Length: 300
Image (cartoon, rainbow, N blue to C red):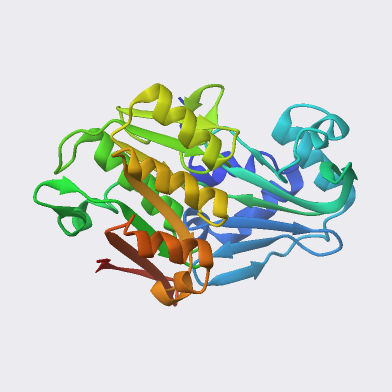
């Protein structure tokens, strides 16, 4: 078991001199570190609850960016870039390296990235106990209701969803549920060689590497879940898959970008979900001045 702190695990992909520069942040800020940003020609920055802070380091060059990809994938940067068509690599511990640069396409499809321009190292954390206090508001007559978690980027919707999955799977203040996770981008459970790097409960089955729609279909046919979870609904395909899952009697847990129901109503696909009554509860997360707030709305 890796005993390093989350920020230490994520920072392991950095070249040595950039890891040394991190310590100028101090212990408290390192413990709160959310992301590291490395942009060619500029010093590394740290994303903290209070905002993005530029570190006292030399400007990042192409060599540092390519070295990080090699560290993240344990292979040459050229080989690695051919495997990261989605623009990110998941690290052991559930951390993620996102990439920007020049896209190379073949027959209209992205096949690789070249000439890296920037990287983002996202620090993953499981925070147990986020969802449990809200559980009574998410249940009716002893039954957990399909729930949509709504939040702007960076407000913690995936972290909240992960803890909600864990709570149901472990049966905290509710019956134990068989939970299936269609983890398209590997952000909920972060499988590493078949093992979730972020705890999602004892009765949870995870499928990653495919679209949410494909994943939900496979999981419902093969794993007989009582609840199914997906992250970041957006496309019409996602919405159809969630509607079909709910039609099979499966409780659905999902997230979407937004700050309130009015944002959902502006998107035809999400508006259809609300009109169909797929979700019965809406959890709205907000972040102001580095502090997160949460409230629950009842959907008719």
